[in-house]
Amino acid sequence: MPTRAERPNFVPFQDTQYSWTDDLPVCKQSGVGFSTNQIYREDGCRQEEHSFEDRSFHCRYDDSTFLYGVFDGHEGTKVANFAMQRMAAEILLGQLNGKSTDEEVKEVLRQAFIAVERGYLDSIGDLLAERASLQFDIPDGLNSYETYQKFPHLVDKLNALNCELSTGSSAVVALIFRGRLYVANVGDSRALLCKTDSNQVLRVVQLSVDHDLRNEDELLRLSHLGLDTDSIRQGSRLGNQETTRCLGNYLVKGGHREFEELASAAAEPVIAEPEIHGGIELDDSCKFLLLMSRGLYKSLEEVTGAEQVNIKLINYAVQEFQVQSTLTGVAQAVVDKVVRIHHDINMSNLQNTVTTGKREDITLLVRNFNFPLPHALRSPTTQSVRFNPIVESAPITTMPENDYSSTGITEETSDLSTTETSSTSDMYPMGARPTDRNTRIKPYVSFSEYYENVEKRRREGTLPEGINF
Image 1: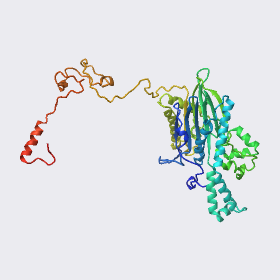
Image 2 (image 1 turned 180 degrees about the horizontal axis):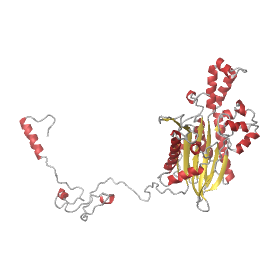
Image 3 (image 1 turned 135 degrees about the vertical axis):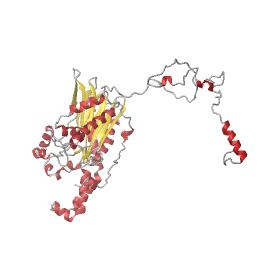
Image 4 (image 1 turned 45 degrees about the vertical axis):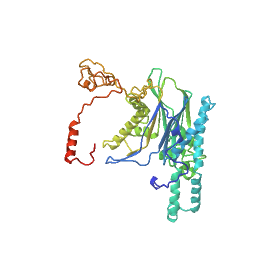
């Protein structure tokens, strides 16, 4: 397949940074941090392998409904953008009306994923038609080398289309509805809930399922479809991707028979059916929730050699809660810490772990429930502040001698207060008080010498032009 730079700019649907979810109120109890992918260079200069492919939203629909999502795109941003724009619409625009049981709410989430998948596949109909036409124009019976020698332009176009059609995305979505938490995911984006047990000890609960080739349940599902899971596991990929579930990527779904290792499947091996957990009652034991793209925990796994890094990530978040003043600051600080660790190991000459020399996109969304943020910035909502455009002079008050603040003039003592024996008291005419707004201030700069010199120069005829009194 051609590289990203060789792909034509197909736009089967709106691929933009703007989403209608941008117009929804942002959830104030959440924050997002991110870092773009990086290829590590010996000279230390930053180089990205591709544009940022993660997308996310964190919105408040009403007082009892909040929705959060992280979408980890691969081979482009089209599916991640599409899912970001459509997922919220498939959940929040009336679908939850009348739903009261956990099963009803979970069904809304399941149908939302299916609707987003169906909507995306419907949007690429023109690409599929063009691809089918190109395949029809290439005669059968030719191997890859012969095909390219005889029809290079057709092969290039077909490869470019295949790149477009392989765009996909993992997704993890969290819904808070009437005090209960629901999490749905496909692919390997992850959700972690930090909560306390009966002994008030912090615990971490993974509320998502990693749909990859380390998942025995997923391998069993593929085996039931007639696939050789041993060879798939050794190859570490399922067609052209590493996950067993995703949104988008037509090539491993409708076009899966074109992959030799997937051709024997009785049905589409990669699916968009989400796994859903909930509802979890959000009581005092629930502290905060983390939603992340795989780049965060994979980077930590790679440099630590450990597969279970959930506890480390929760610990990082707890540490940042103690020092940051915003939830966005918490999320970004955790991301920055993992990025720095991964960078330092990759750039070190004393590497004890196997690294790839690059790092994926990272997104981390933090939703706080009741974990303390001691340095949080708070608005002065308890006081009513009003701007008064009328300027009034303050009365002269008496301050004891040598009564100065060690930290300098504070707001409480900066109201023009002075002593009655101040040398500036002669600025006011005798008997006048500065509280009289119309009092004329006695002049304290004499211009008499200036006027005398001007008059002298006028008599002598040496006064410069432009000076005329």
